[in-house]
Length: 442
Image 1: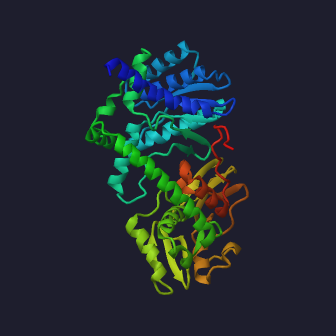
Image 2 (image 1 turned 30 degrees about the horizontal axis):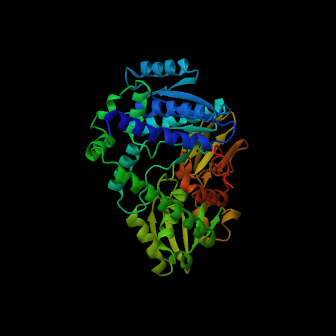
Image 3 (image 1 turned 180 degrees about the vertical axis):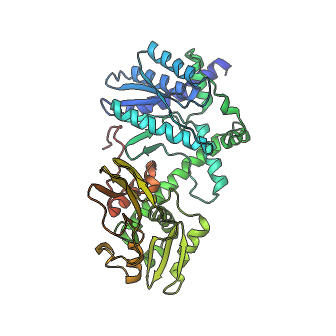
């Protein structure tokens, strides 16, 4: 096979993925494509537009947005270059600047959060049904290797094909099984130039070091990521069933778990306990392998055994395990008039008054609320003392408190949607929306 024909064949791989995505879109779907100007995102935009033309999907609207993080001097020019590319092709485009002070540490994570927040807000403004991002097979392989390095125990999955942002906007990754080289070959055949970000070669970043270590060997890790994703989806479904069968939630703050039920399926129990601990502890991630093993060992512990992990207290009471937020580390915060803040990673405080409100944990000597009446008396009092309060009295009129599920508040992978919605119902949280951009299957 000649070099030219091989390039054409590789380019077809990217086009096939775009065709598959476009062919499944619901009538009238509005797709917002995140475009940085690099080869991956520019190739995604070009391929989706080409596929829509080939399928005569004039009902589909494709828009683009570029997030300017303002971290490099060239970023504004790169955003302008994308804007010109879109203007020539009559594609609606908007540049979304990340304004404000940038953190001294954790810059990459902060930039990612800002990027997705800006995209979700823009999608809502323009009425987009879905946000398409250009993560590739290369990105998937790198992600899997990084996650395996942190936690080698299954299920170590890569990026999900779709993820819910901030509980309101779905992100989809149409090129997750397409190599970066295939995308670049497509751009070459279409005579489209792209911009190379110099940070992609900066070995100061973990992802770059992993990319260099893989040296283009992405097929095997990519297949492994796909299998791991299927495994995680199955475990999540099993955990959802186990939650229904074995867990009772009190006052959106305490879990009562049937130890006999969870002992029958340790893998699903571990997945369930990790998610539950994160929610009750107000953390974005659950405890690690060793802590989960200790929690599961409570099934063999004597009555009254106790331990802490992930900011939670675990206590065995006959055949039940109670899980609640421990009192240590509960904070005091000030909520300014007409603002919203998150307290302890568990509660959203909406201050719709003209006065500042200080939120603190309730008193240990306070009268337990009815929601905890079915708990053992000591645990009922303890649970009450971990709830938000404004001093000794009730919260002022105009101050609303609502539960949040911390691990799902910003990013919810599609394979965890069913489990997250079981949790949402039990904790009194509005259900997370299902993806609605594809034609429903019969």
